Image (cartoon, rainbow over all chains, first blue to last red; front, side, top):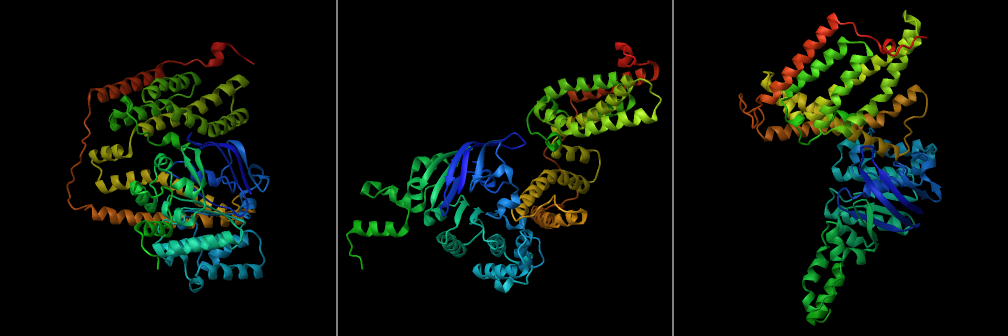
Length: 274
Length: 262
């Protein structure tokens, strides 16, 4: 459980990135944090594993105040996958890369081997076990970074911009993967600009702007609200946009699912569904 | 602290001055600061820069720089007090304190004059003035690129440290060997990314016909104006006056003026 109590954060260079954020994320929730560049999304999630400590207010992870424990201690519970895999890959082989964190956390040899095998398998990387991570493609490197965090099985998983540089197929696989992790009881928090991706995942959406939370609710309620979306400098999901433009034909304004839209259109046209 | 040495892109009379004139001014401050080792002239030198900083509109960055350098200043002060106490003929404690303060203020003046130059001179202008001084363009370009990438690299290093700490890396822990080994997961991504970026930069430059002609022309041509000559003249006067004072006038110490003897 993540409990954020009215936090403020100012960077050493004087930029006030968070201006009073309160938030509760319960176990097993799937949350997407959205907003324009500089809204404070990444700053907020960096508080979840103690990389940043609030200037004012406090963050509790399972009732532990992040100010009083090390990042390493929190990281055991909160896995953080950074946006750019090139900021973390350094090992000679993919296998070593994945076992790095496991060694840091003091797992024994046998467990390390099992966990590495499991992580390689689940992200379809087994054939690259002995390959240098620097030889892989961008998408594959991103998967290695994800595997290296998943390996220690953190309770809470934070993904910063997971869809950047991923093609359509990889995005769909990522989505399946996230949902699967979520169904297994993990709390998943993603930080993203990718509104189409979020519309397909339908998580709880937290919209941020200028260091504050401006909306918090179901994806359907937040992402189909044209005013909110415009204020946050985002664009509506394509489907919502299409139906919104057909508003005068009596289509509802809060649809973002392709299949739902298809059914509505078919119904409107009076066709028989076959 | 490095923010105090990073170019601040605003418009002020000080920003518009020719880098060469500014460089002469800063050099003069340097020389004068090294001339004197008494507290009074160094203090005057320190405070006389404040109006310039106001004109340049960089008060905030300057204050941060002073704050950032206070740690080193404290070390210099303590080292001076200790060494003067044991290895000099100064009899009174007040004099030792004054002398140590003078050395500390000298350090701050040197840092301060550096920061005035770098806060108000863009790397582009710096490169341009080097070029107009006849230095081959390749060197100017390498120089300005190096300066420009320092903050980028610093930021990247911070991100990498964050990423590895999130994977349970404890940078501070362990004995010396372990500590050195702890830096491997940080240095490798940093170096790999720097090399990758330099290759990308080289490709981007080539695709924009870098080095296609031997004789390059520039969009801006630096030309000395009235203000620039004024600053150079002021610098020369400051230098001349201080040389005269240094040679012929005995500067009293603050201890003498205040008549503290212990």
